[in-house]
Length: 284
Image 1 (tube, rainbow, N blue to C red):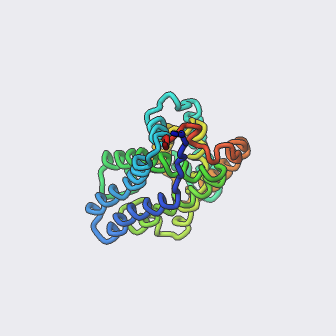
Image 2: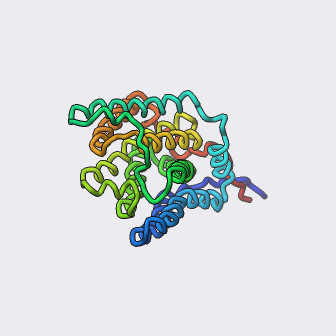
Image 3: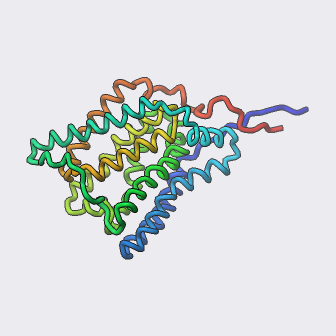
């Protein structure tokens, strides 16, 4: 007699992060010891790692539900809540404005409202730099939203998921502080700037999770927001000191978002059922 049994997919966040770090850092660490131009290729390959690992995890999962979920998140334009994405962009723009204004209390100039002529990382032209931050926004989100965040959120509420993701995502950039020509390497002139960079990733983890959830887990929404953040961080002439102020401002905004969206961040209804009731496969 044949019986149908649903086999549920089990997310593997620890294995994902181990492989994402491994296949990023094995390219980024050698880039520390070679010229900037040669290092650019290795950095690009390392940047691809989370997206590649995420896609492989989904493709070899044997779960039709997981594959469909990834497809819907990438090409499901209808899922994007465009007004929410616009609101997130406006919020971040206001964070920058508030940070610059507050920085004047510490002797910084209002000239920071100007656009910079160049990008903060060297070794590439302006057009290549723009392509780089665009690719970073697209490729990273395929990895982080394609599998990573859900793999954590499957087991806990979105508050703790955001905290864990923010820490791990921030630390993933660690080798870049030793690679000449990167934005992160430019921060090495002052340990406070380096610390601020890694700390700032934690509240940003909450903000990007908010963007993700209010657009029904849309990767496209996160790509658009991530691109805007990268562009503004690069082209607005904020000093490193002001970016430390910005971390305080974005942390305060994060607290407000969590309070307003308390049910979103602390509910556990999704735990164990992110893929819904879709049957992965039938076992005879």
